[in-house]
Image (cartoon, rainbow, N blue to C red; front, side, top):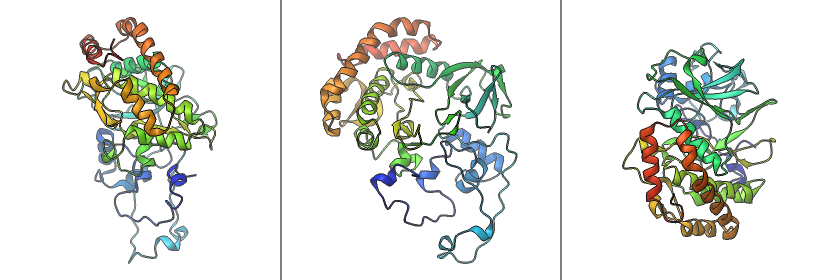
Length: 370
């Protein structure tokens, strides 16, 4: 199976998709956004909207198990050329293999393999593969923020990959990019790589056939959960895990849990599971006026207004018995109230950011207030 969308829409790939610039969403979403996309385009001397050269450059190290390989001219199927006029070959210079990778997202991030305690920025596929996020040149202390938010989420039962804060001196072969004057990068183990090779994964923008610029609109958290409940190999546990993550995002003031920050993966090739969590950041510390989730949940986005009743309506719309969700929310809230104050004190988030997060806790619904 190429994409989970095929199960819900069996004819999805029967239509021939042709374009001279933009790839279809299922492929376009494999490419990076923002600063990393600009860096790749500049390296290739192409426009940032020219997606075919970007895919060709990163084709052997895309997220998940997909690979984009070149075809010889005589191997191109006739049906793909039937509606085209005169054809002209285009030469794409893809450069050396050492750093050919694509990682979806806005922040500068690089694929690496850890060897002898160091992280080598490389396209090599190995069991100890990590994503490295370098310090932001726009916002201060993002690696420390994400590390802290992920650890707090883990403490209330959110499933996360291995994570580390890594001194910049531990990174080898880092491209010549502008870095903030900070000491640490954030490292997260790739769940789409294993000892046996690549593990297929796709985000919900791909599944819903939406481009990255639509990741904040058009869908809601009920629709994500409904897909999980319908197609996951473990429907109830995955939706229960999603409920914990939704609560974690509210309590951690993460307003960036958009469609691309929810994914499924195929750990045994055919099993469909909610992937481990990633990209949990306390966004409110950088955007003081931010007070809402990225998507609607039961027609609500405002953090102070999200309560147990909101989650109950969410569960009802999915068709899941409320007690099966409520028990996980109660457990996560109890853990947060018991563990988070002491954990936050010792975690590496900047002191000013910690103060904003503590203030945020006081604004939440009484159901979730710390």
